[in-house]
Length: 80
Image: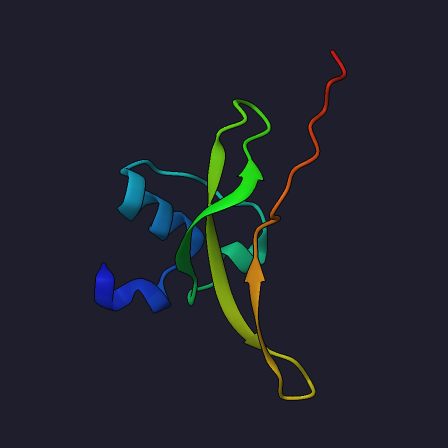
C-alpha cells in the first residue's frame, strides 16, 4: 500500500499494517488521506501498550495546513 498510503483511511492502514479489520465510529477516521507516523506516547487503555499513530493533513479557513492526530497520552483510569 506504499503508494496508496496518502489515500487510505485509518481502518485500511490498520488492516494493511497489522492484518486485522477494525471499525471506526468517528467520521474523520473514515476519510481518505491518513498516513502512519509510528509509535506514539499514547497507551492502550486496555493493555497499556504504546499505540501506533496516524495523521491526516487538513487546511484551516486561514489557509494553514495542520495534521489531525490521535491523542499522544491517554489518562489511565484506575477505578475498578
